[in-house]
Length: 318
Image (cartoon, rainbow, N blue to C red):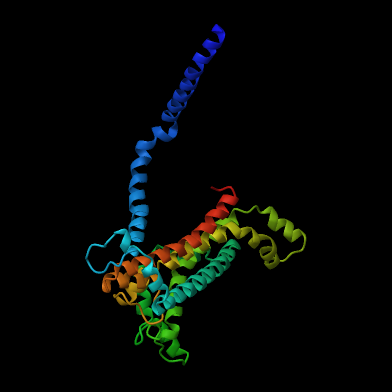
């Protein structure tokens, strides 16, 4: 009987000691001890990023216009703005332009970057010079790139029209013509970002062992077949990571389009979701409408990033 009482009386103490030990272990862990260094930046980032997303979502559920305070009462919160946005021809046109920009810009940059990387990997003449020339535009901001190409596309004295006159085509309104304006914008962006994909692919190519090339040559495979059948399939991770970066840039190309004209409405045929969003907010004062567009843009960005994160998780990189 006495033994039973002793055992029962010691059980709570054992559990209590175990709980205290776990708490003490947690407080002494590297996570907690390093919190003064990462805690404040993490808190500020959480407020700025996720707080901003939450605030934008809240505004999109109201009918806020101008500088007036939105009404956040439950009776006034609905998804009316999302319905209006989806039913707008301007939104559908901007979304279509955004999709074309995203697909064409990303695809051409990847193909051109891969081609340049293979040339450099083969040790062509003036290797370092070519690499510098194609990488230099990546160091420029969107504003500088837009101003450079605005001058090159100038109808009267632009370099592009000097070339077209020389070959007998005549001057072309590269920016003012709605049928080619989006293509002109995409061409300028490809000029800026193809160097980035070149570096990504070049790093991937030079990380591969030389044994693969030697074995392919021993088997009688040509250089072209070696790249197509052996080397390029191993560039999958480089392609995925570069494509995600390029698609994110394509979704937020507002700065480039704004710098082309200096106003919220870009040239005809080049309106994208980012320019439409900013124009609705800061020119027309439709804050709730603009916030709904921003939410759709966020969903598109997540649609680009989420598969990449899942891919990284499946590869064990997360």
